[in-house]
Amino acid sequence: MSEPKIAILVLSTEFEVALPDMPSVAAQTFPNDAAGLRSFVTWVKPKLATLEPSENPLKICLLGGEAIASRTSLESAVTESRAPINELEPFDASIRLLSEGERSRGITRRGLADAIRYCLGERL
Image 1 (tube, rainbow, N blue to C red):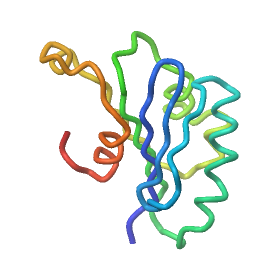
Image 2 (image 1 turned 45 degrees about the vertical axis):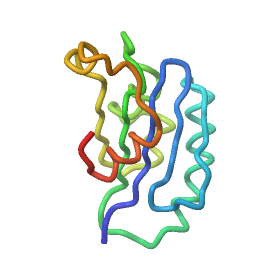
Image 3 (image 1 turned 135 degrees about the horizontal axis):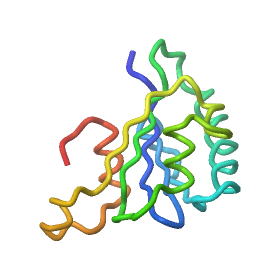
Image 4 (image 1 turned 180 degrees about the vertical axis):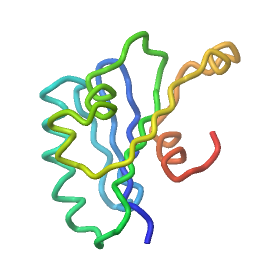
């Protein structure tokens, strides 16, 4: 069985979340700060409980929606498994930010559909 997935589009002031395994659940947007992280975890935990049990860890996919100079609250909490994100353990996080090459080719923004594709393992 595949791992449950959370696709996240990360922007400097907010992040947008989709659950590819639950397409009927509408995407949500949260502020990219401590309060937003808590709201996100409170929102997502009951939804994950409704998925069938899996032997695989939760897959959290962070896709940078824009070029951001420094790490955001969400990115730091995921990479360091800090509260409240650590409540979602065990998880396997993957992060893809816009590269210099992408920016030089004029790719300056990505959307939530790109984050979902990235989380499903499709090539961007």
